Image 1: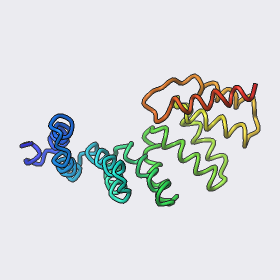
Image 2: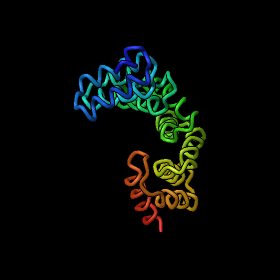
Image 3: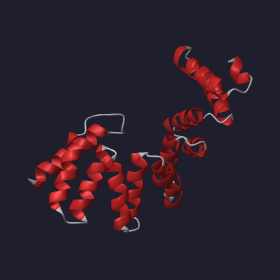
Length: 193
């Protein structure tokens, strides 16, 4: 706590987690997370974004995610992009935040760029490039997207099967809903046989 008062961002984050998890002092923890974010603790910004998103305050969550992204926290970039895309329907802003995440190797951000390039702009070569990046990173959603794209747009069932097989074989990991995407890929694969 004292470290945070001395403006040490990491101390703010650590105390905030302690306050929330162990002391059950959620409001105090949020105060220290916000201070940590103000002191450029990217992880504090991400957690504050999550807290506001879970509370339904989209505007505040986006504010914290954007700040976290400016501090190079790639999950914050992903969530800022997702919130802009889903809630504000702002494609340009979504791409602005997905791009740094993808550039730093965040496969889900790459997959989202592929989705936007395909479905909103009909830029199929660009979509294919981003889906492939996501699949090459061994994400179930990336390989499912690449398989679906290959089946629907490229009309190449042989290659689509390969992508579905890869997605089907990816087991649960820390990717969002990887088990669900893997299950969908397995069903698509079965339908192609």
